[in-house]
Structures are given as C-alpha cells and as structure tokens.
Length: 154
Image (cartoon, rainbow, N blue to C red; front, side, top):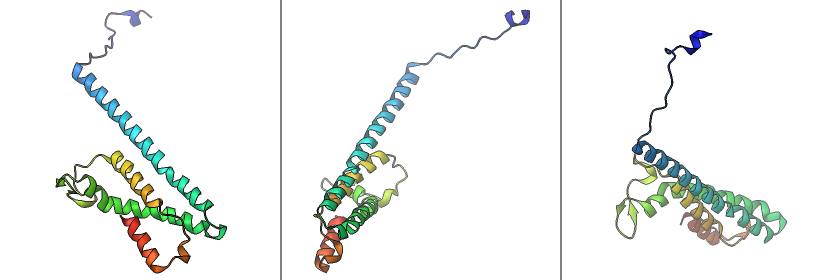
C-alpha cells in the first residue's frame, strides 16, 4: 500500500491550450453549427415538396394522384441532376462575369467543399420546379408535356 503514495508516481497534467488552439476550436464549433443550421433550413425548404404534393393531390381526381406524386418525385430527381451538372456552376461559378458564373461543371474542381450550400440551393431549385400547376400527365398534349419538361430543366 505504501507504494501508491511514493513520490515516483507520475502526476498527469493537462497541457495548457494556447489562444490559437482555442480560436481554432471555436472556429470549428462555429463552422459545425453553421453547417447544421444550413442543412436544417434546406430540409425545411425541401419539406415544401410534400406540401405541394398534398396540394396537387387534393386538386385532382383520385385516378391521377399516383401520376402527380410520381411527377413530384421525378421533379426532385431531374432537378438534382440538372442542378448538379449545370445549375450550381452557372449560379455560383468562380469564373465568368457579373451576369453568369462559369468554371468546371459538376464540381470537377478539387477544392469544392461547400456541400451544405449546394443542398440548400438545390432545395430551392427543386421546389421551384414543383410549383407547376397540377394537371394529369397522361392527358396532356405533347406540346404541354414538352413545355413542362423545359420548365423543369430551367
């Protein structure tokens, strides 16, 4: 028992943090909170898709509800691919001019790291494509169908 109380027992001290270490930890925590908030807001905006789906389903006859819900899912998928490939670069590209952005399409640059902003902007693009007035897709004329596809791509 006496061996536990000997002066040779090492005392573990925590190293003192410098101001630079504390500033870095604060910046990391701040970045994590900001990213979390942007993602929560993106999910809230994307949740509008469900509201539009319910509104459109209530505006149609029962036989067309499946079609309009499938249209909303297709809107999300098509707008995701189109915004990934073209939209984000045009809107937020680093090169270009004051009117339109430019640069490498589809995040081909190695230094892209703002995925939360991409998801947030995509949620708005997908929701904007969903606001097309409800009408059953099978009963549309070919010209109306083409204009709906062009609207979704824009």
